[in-house]
Image (tube, rainbow, N blue to C red; front, side):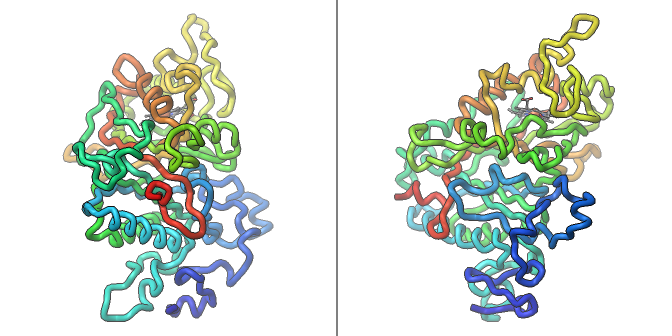
Length: 436
Ligand SMILES: C=CC1=C(C)c2cc3[nH]c(cc4nc(cc5[nH]c(cc1n2)c(C)c5CCC(=O)O)C(CCC(=O)O)=C4C)c(C)c3C=C
Ligand SMILES: [Fe+2]
């Protein structure tokens, strides 16, 4: 195993790769995890000042586990999402790609360089195994989460890899929703990989290296950068804001609510094919937001559209952020305080047969268009046990100009649905249960 100068300085070489950056020397990670992740309540608190901790981003998120990381993991600040097209016809090549990707994912999520020699310790006559831009950076809570699209199982009626009869019925072709203006180039994909990290360079490095490893076997169909996580997935996180300026994620499923996570997020035995037991279904929607039009809407109008107060995030029926929504409350003029066409009413489980989602989206700004308008929006990401009963049901309730008032300000332009297999142990590879 090679070791770079940095490793010799840090004095730590991990067994499966070259460590990019260590904690304070070889300090134990357990005590350092306090306040890990951007936006945690502990950050900047008196407690944190009295008990300084090493950079919490140096404590990696476990890659191995019953479920994949990156679903209930406290949402990191940054996203690089990529959808791949598989360009080989060989099942063996597909399996070897998943094996190579898993090895690299193990390395990178642990904060190590990719491969045996990494970026600079290999033979000088061949391209380095790792592209190098994350050298010196900690793991930054990087998680890598994989999902398989419908076209991996069968495409144009062709059973490409002998997987056609293993496609779960939950992995539906999403219906057309009223108002959709989907652009095919940013829809679908055979395989999706969600990279989340607190440092954008770490997330980009991960996707770049996975794309490089895939050369000749899979190519990037599209990718999306995101920032400012628009959901909290843990009670320990403060609720972030989306580009409409509203707190987003208040009523999200939180990892501490284990019963809800079990009931609404993870596929279980009997739900579908056994290879998906412990997995989950991912739906993505790239939603453009008409920022300039929104910015001309009055505060009262904006709050009426969302159904929550812009400052506190509390319901329009009253109370602070986490006060339950009271849909029966009427104002003095007899109108519901949380409007009939408000977003939170139409998205709420009470109006969707009890359905809930684990939301994990990110803001995006792809620069400005030719008229100087922000090309911005929400890259909506959600995880669930059955998209038919969850995303599709809720989106059908929201879609259309006569439904959610927010539809005047948004348009769905990208879409994807993926079956995310269960987690991997310390050996094995992503999606192994699908091929055995
Ligand atoms: C189909 C699912 C959903 C889409 C698409 C969606 C788009 C979308 N949402 C916001 C902003 C907010 N959403 C909020 C709550 C909320 N949204 C959904 C679902 C979708 N949103 C759900 C299930 C909920 C929770 C409803 C509840 O149980 O109360 C909120 C309020 C804060 C919160 O609870 O998170 C905001 C704000 C935007 C801007 C957007 C598309 C661009
Ligand atoms: Fe929403």
